[in-house]
Length: 314
Image (cartoon, rainbow, N blue to C red):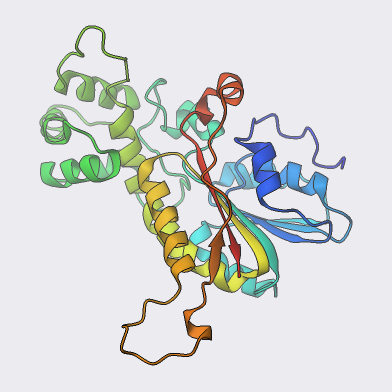
């Protein structure tokens, strides 16, 4: 395959394992719900024949702009979050015909590496964090009016931040003195609100959990994941694969429970008479969860927390 090869230098996570998990067919139809910079999509297209097809989604205008450089008639990009998956797949007349659906959750490397997007606590930039800058409100806008209780709830729920209440109170106190507009301002507030790390304890940046929580909240990431998973059941063809890479426990828990519930089938009360077909599973789990090995982590440190789950449509 030549038209997409080497167009995107971005290093995709668990690439070989994703391609294997999708059980690619030469003439298959595949959906990349999180195009990013096209690393996974490009590799999938290289494995397909002339009748194969990839439909990709991304809500980030920068990602969509990158996708428009792909000059392959087997490829289409849709500017949308993946919660709208069924609506767009139906428009393309592909319901029940898709051989594989792939989700690479969380923030992308290009988003982290672009200071103006405000995702990174390691670089100064506007306090934004929106995956689609044209939608909803930024982190700065939300923090300017949220109560300390609301901020603490977000930090605790989405970041599992131990010092959520202390950080929330510090944010509210700081905004009374100055408008919070940059990532460096927020990092300084978060760091000062936490006790100094104990000597010898493995270092973790004090803003890690808070930035994660605010990003997940402002982009409704978990809500969108919960919305898209049930849709795959009507989109996948029999034998089609669902492949999901998660990067923290909250995402993985949702995916794990969804697959588990689909494997069990409908949970009817014991006394209710039902047909045998009604008890059949809609998905079956394929193998155990997959994590990157030491070699991949060394080559791509951002892969260290990745966990991939695979299921097949019955």
